[in-house]
Image (tube, rainbow, N blue to C red; front, side):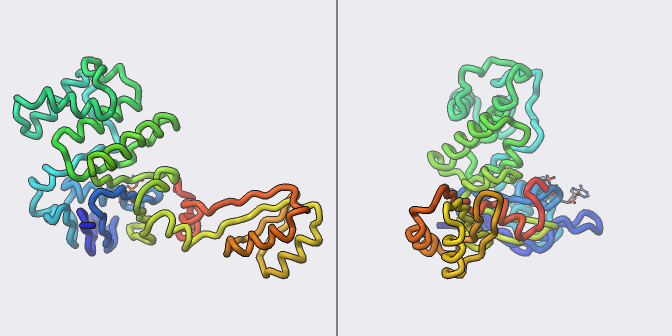
Length: 304
Ligand SMILES: Nc1ncnc2c1ncn2[C@@H]1O[C@H](COP(=O)(O)OP(=O)(O)OP(=O)(O)O)[C@@H](O)[C@H]1O
């Protein structure tokens, strides 16, 4: 698969302060990629530089093979951007907001109506075309913004914290649209997020802290590398369980009502369970999460 975004040795300084410190990564065409990191890690700075809003200090940033500093026009024509803060005009209708952007992108008058309907259909808001933006809920406004970012059929969609401040149900709803875009329209999605559950469904995740990428891989691979699953077993015969745990050389801790056991090999745990079946009162297996990965490598919680 071709890499639609290539970033190499990217540095961004604000005066003497280095916000992004020699960062390199690539994003596959058609994938969902997430930048994760605490506040101030450098995520927005990277997105804004890729979107041609900020100038790099040094390094190379390419989108679709074009340099974002040199080929700004081309890059702008193939990216869509949804910023952290809403940039809709509340005093205009949904349709007016979208049409204004069509003019901004230089779309031909003859296709504007069709295009507005097309993008509103993607986010299920065709019936809200004539509504004033001020009358919409937070989640609907986000959907209008996503629709607006798609007006010129971008190849890459940048979403800077697309669901921050929205309730869980609305967040899930927005994600349905994001996944639909990636799957059906083959748009590459590049997002920043603080939410672990959002990062879990991305193809690749980069964890950024203090301007550096400190981990980069699929969520699954990161969890494999940095976390251990934990089994919690409540037993009717604790002495026998402890004997077995020692026999299998497994690390464990006794809690009030159960033993918490570090699982390196699931097959080993299965063997132990088989030998102890009749005495097991309760068992729960906890998988490592991206938050555990984050804690392990940054020492911080994901919310920073
Ligand atoms: N215009 C600016 N001038 C000076 N420093 C800045 C400027 N913009 C950002 N910074 C600093 O650069 C660092 C990275 O900021 P950035 O906004 O890229 O982080 P972020 O990871 O997106 O954080 P958040 O999750 O809060 O959006 C922070 O320390 C921030 O204070």
